[in-house]
Length: 119
Image 1 (cartoon, rainbow, N blue to C red):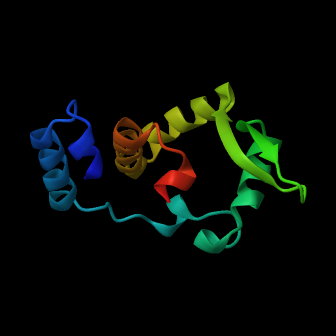
Image 2 (cartoon, helix red, strand yellow):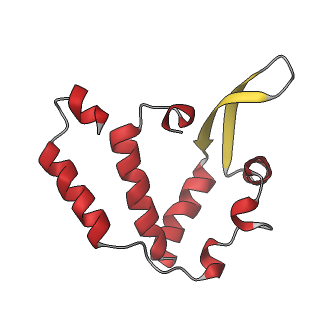
């Protein structure tokens, strides 16, 4: 909402309509199998998931290293095979379209912020 105070290119009416649609069209009911992560669901370490996706060639990332050797400021890139898999899944798992649309909205209005800034 603070963006709307500083960015005059964002239409208040458009945002209001989007918010009304979000409340009207609830999140889809998802079968557990569709959204199940590899081992521990939502409690799985994101680093394990990223390592897996890198190992099978779906993504790559760049990052900086801290003094203690840990990575930070990661920027993720989806490889061609990852993009193809996502596009195929959007067709074969219809509920993913809902999440894809939500991610598109986030990118549209908040895409210039880093994950840390959004957090």
